[in-house]
Image 1 (cartoon, rainbow, N blue to C red):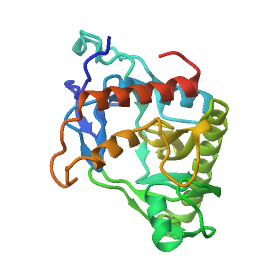
Image 2 (image 1 turned 120 degrees about the horizontal axis):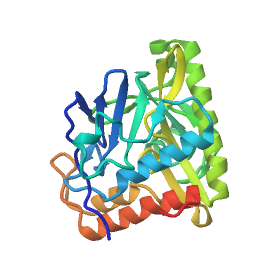
Image 3 (image 1 turned 180 degrees about the horizontal axis):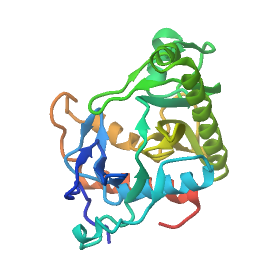
Image 4 (image 1 turned 135 degrees about the vertical axis):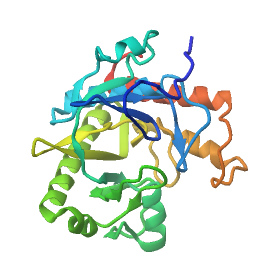
Length: 291
């Protein structure tokens, strides 16, 4: 039986809310709750996707473990000071206690395939974020090699693509180069593992932070919210691909009369259930674990 979606957590600690996560300040640590909220076209939908937050959390935990790169995770257990405020155990499986890193204010995006805003950019300029690409590429073609295309971080609204040079001017060239290399390395390792499981990671975005004078991986990593996942055996350039991510919701919304400038409609139950199935399918395929 599918549980009801958790759209919001309410704990008696200072809270900051993102589109999906509720982040609580516990003093020397942060407590992150992944809700079942889902966003599309910069709007949070009025209803959520049951178990989505648990998928995001468990998949991030999997990647933090197998990637072996220094990150912000301390524990996936509900801490003692929070437990009395969660008597029904709603936060189990969807939370992380993490180091209090200083966020570096750029989304570190890497693209291995030509889709989304990159495809639109290529169609109009022959480039992606100013990076020259071969002529006559098709939608969802694999790029000759993955490209790093950073974006400014937005708490609400849309992240804005910027050039690597703009990023370098903002945070300094050595740090920008370090982030580019780390991001490309994480992506390639994720791609290699997922491909063995029959999944293409077409692109992803990572976040990094400073902790103890070191750059560490923060937030989520290689999830259906932050990446495009395609079934490898169905990949065929020239059109949009079947996916295991929230692209399914975007495509549904594009068939409605919603203008994307006003509050969004409620997602129909069949769309909710099919989206849930896609998220769980992504988790099971990549990790080899049953949900």
